[in-house]
Amino acid sequence: MGGNLVQNYGEVVAMVLFGIGFTNLLLQKNMIKKIIGLNIMDTAVYLFLAEKGYITGHIAPIIKNGDFSPDTYINPVPSGLVLTGIVVSVSVTALMLSLTIRLYRRYHTLDLDEISTRLKKEGR
Amino acid sequence: MEMILNFPCLCILLTMFSAIISSALNRRWARYLNTFVVTLVGILSAAVLMFTLTSGKSYVYQMGHFPAPFGNEIRFGSLEAGMALFFSVIMLLSLNGGREKIRMEIDPGKEKLYYIMINLLLSSLLALVYTNDIFTAYVFVEINTISACGMIVITEHGRTIEAATRYMIMSLLGSGLFLIGICILYDMTGHLLMEYLYTSISNIMAAGTYRIPMMVAIALIVVGLAIKSALFPFHAWLPDAYGYSTVSSAAMLSSLVSKGYIFLLIKLIYRVIGFEVFFGSRIINVLFVFGLAGMIMGSVSAIRENDIRRMISYSSVAQIGYIYMGFGLGTGAGMVASVFHILSHGATKSLLFVAAVGLTDASGGHKEFDELTGAAYRNRLAGAAFLVGALSMVGIPLFSGFISKLLFAQAAVQSQGKALAALVVLAVSTVLNAIYFMKTVIRIYTPTDKKYEVTAFGYKVSYAITLGCFILLNLLLGLFSQPITNWITQGLTILQ
Image 1 (cartoon, rainbow over the protein chains, first blue to last red):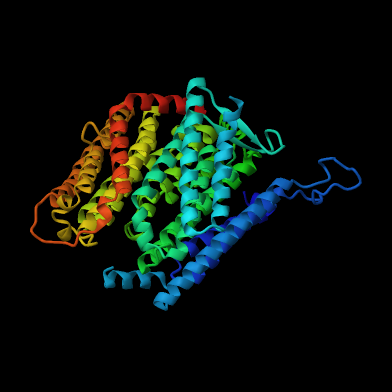
Image 2: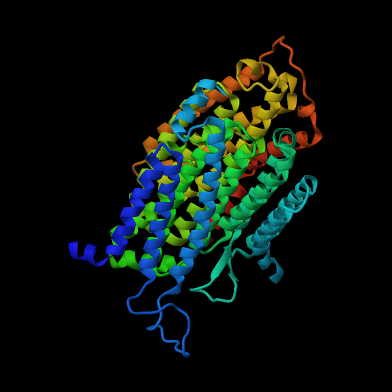
């Protein structure tokens, strides 16, 4: 058990980071900290994927000297997934930041709970 | 015949390109293009539905030049085609019913952006329905979330921005879990296409190794999608988002966006996880308990609400609970009931939202119950439509809600060990539904002497036609339930 954890330390770190990001996104009151949590969470997933796609001693999948042997290259699919995921998380982060700017301009605070209580007091 | 096989892919591309083209058009042409595309998608999906129903088979459509284990695929059978048709019909009707409101509530410079969001929403829904690749499903889940968020914030209002922020946070938590779930599944199986995942998962489960990691991955995927579709404890954003956004957005969010995720989950259950593996796991008990809790708590919150739009929104929480309760029963009949409820709730909830806006407009724009007294006399058609929707939600025979309650009850009786809990909660929830819907109906049909300025909105021809179509759709689902359940059963069988 312990040996496995040491051997797959990359995956372990990824899962710990995922947990940190997830709890930050869920529990932080400050919007900016929430967004940072979101980015930590997504990056943890990419670390996990990259760790799974990498094979020790193999090189990036760009064909060299006509060598088509699968023993030379790493698995390219997880890298492709990471790229797609990065695009998604960038756009989502941009959207969240723009919403935060809107909220800040209206209420002059980044605390989402305070905004909610203020909205309830206003009654509409 | 070969031509028809291209239609699902064509629908997705058509909606995506129309979103791009809309950005270069003015608001009027963006509106025309949107109406045209949604109608066209409906017609094409109907053709695919006819074709798949007569052939009784499902088809795989290869995207790009990489064959099966590597490339991307679209797959469709009668259930998928029917869902695409249903989604486009509801979208067209909701947009038509709220057209005046869109014009009034949205800044004219931004109306174009609204139609871009609608086109993107339809394309992501179609992709979720048709895709055969789970990573593509993840990407379109995110597109769906972003366009739904755009639809909420388009009416600039403190409440909607706050609601959209909460919605985004909940959705991102859900999609994070979904993403890590599919990454773990990919690591264990090495596949992203659904058939290959299914074979690998059943091999792994048969061999008995890696049982716990597999269950963790499946649980992450299921919980992620449940969070995104606002299952009971994760519904905090929902009343504000549905209650304060423009009426077409509210109707589409409740009957399309959350249903898209649920349909993806159904597809994953049948095509990736496998019926036996999923129903043999304890995940369904969790879904069952939260579904039951949602059925009660959603209705209780709705009773306490004093705002008609927010009351209808809380009722959505209860109805999502019904659907997950159907999953939790763990039988094929439960799944059929859930799919039928997706249709029935979609048709009824959008009707209620569109009818409610007619009632509130006839009461000087007030949404509180005191002001709504006698609203049904001021706008008779909206009143009648609201009555139909309310009767359907309560589960009166003739209307679609009755059939879904009947199917749920039948499925509950067949299931082992869960029959009593499901039936009791179903009965309690029906009574609670009746309390708040009948309270509203009595309120709007109580005559009053108070005068309100009558807006022309309620008497527009397109609004009247929309309400007529919605009522007809409801009756259709209620009266011809046998062919529809046959279609669902057949569709679910060939989904595997």
